[in-house]
Amino acid sequence: MTWHWPRIRAFPALALLLVFLSVGLAQGGVIHLLLAYGGRSASVVALVNQFTGALGAWLALPVVLFVVANVAPRGSQWLRLLWLHVAGYVAFTTLHVVAIRALRWPLWAVFHVLPTNDGPLYFRVLWEAQNDLLVYSGVAALLTLLRVWQERKTSELRAAQLEAQLARAQLEVLSARLDPHFLYNALNTVNAVMHEDLARTERLLSGLGHMLRTALTPGEATWTVEEERDYVQRYIELLDARFEDRIAVEWHFEPGLDRVRVPRFAIQVLVENSAKHNLDLTNPIRVQVRAAVLRDELRITVEDDGRGFPAGTAAAVASSSAGADIRGLARLRQTLELIHGDCGRLALAASERGGARVTLEFPRVMS
Image (spheres, rainbow, N blue to C red):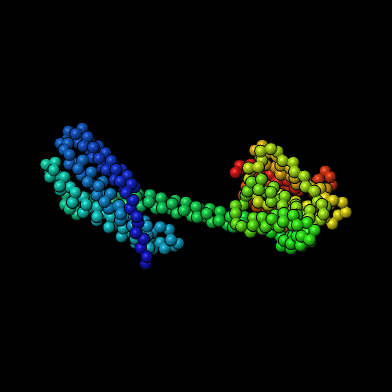
C-alpha cells in the first residue's frame, strides 16, 4: 500500500490556528459569562479549558490531513476508507486528549487556578471522544470536499491544456501546407524561364525560396495581412510565369489592415482554388480580393469569374467528406474553427460575374 503524506503549508496552518483559537476563546468567554450570570464563581478555568481544547485539536489536525490524503475517492475501496477513518479518529482523539493534558497543567499553574472536578479520567476521555467525533467528522468532510474540488479543477486544467495542445498540433498540420505539385510545377517554370530572362529567374527563385522557408518553418497559426499578402504576391508571380498572365488578381483592401492577423495561407488557399479550377478555360481568369472591417470583424472576400462551384460543394466543405479538389477549403474552415470557434465563418456563394465567391469572417485581432 502506498501512503500519501500531506504537505503542510505555513499560511493555511496559521490561518486554521487563528480560527481554532478564536472559537476556543469565544466558547470559553461564553461559559465564563454564563457562570457569572448564574451567580457561580466565574474563574478563568473555563477559558483555559476551551483554549487548550482548541489548541489541542489544532495540533491533532495532521492526523485528519493524512487520512483524507489516503482515502480520497479511489474507485470502490470503501473498506479501506472505513478502516482508515476509524483508525484516524482514534488517533486524532488520543492525540487531542494527550495535548489537552500537556497544555492545561502549565496554564493552570500560571493562572494559579485549580482544575474543576469533572469526574474520573475515563469519563473525561469519553467526553472529549464524543466531542472529537463531531470535530473529526466536520474537518474530514470539509477537507475531502476541498480535495475533490481541487482535483476537479486540476483535471479540468489538464484537459484544457491537452485540448489546447491538440488544437495547436492540428493548426500546425493545417497551416504547414505546401502542394507538392505546385512545387514541381514551379521548378519546371523556373527551368523554362532561366534561358530567357535571368533577372526574372532570380526573382522567381527568391520568391520560391521565401515560400518554401515560410511553409516549412514552424510558426503561429496566424500572421498579419501584410505577411499574407506578400506570400500571395510571390505565389501569383510564379503562376504568371507558368501560365503567361492567364490569371489577374486585384486587391481591394481598406487602409489600416496591414497589422490585422489572419490565418496563415488563408487568402493563398482561395486564390489557388480559383486558379486550379479555372485555368483550363479559354478566357483569362480575374480574381478580386477584398478586405474590410464590419462590426469589429474582418471580412475577406475572394471571388472570380470562372465556372463557379459544382453542386454540393458547400455541404461537402461543411462536413468531413471534402474531396481532394476542395480539401483546401475544408482545411481553411477547420482552421477558422480552431482559432475563433463559432466566431470564425466560411461561406460559399456564386459570384455576380458567374464565378465562385468565398467569404471569410472572423474577429479583428491586431498584431
